[in-house]
Length: 138
Image (cartoon, rainbow, N blue to C red):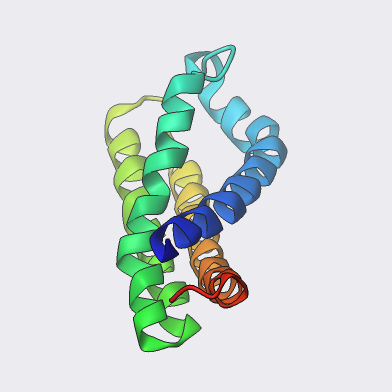
């Protein structure tokens, strides 16, 4: 039960943070840089798959170690590192293979992935502890 609570405690904050980022930065950063290689509409099944899979990484590599340690620090640090590595892999691969992909886009997106993941990791630690205490589960 703790795993399910922790997973949802990552999914919701990360999804909300990313929705705000994409709605604000999509038209300002991604659209001007990527132009016509962007789809007219989001590929919803692919987006859903990402948002269901990505929190598993934060759960395994950050939230669970933080819960075991009884400290938010591992959640924040390990989730941020996970975000930097995951987004870095995506962004640097795109920069290496896509004509329109720029260094500015790589740096901005990697910074965002690091920040959003770190915040989601920290939020998940606090939310999981709070909800688990409230539900009386360990």
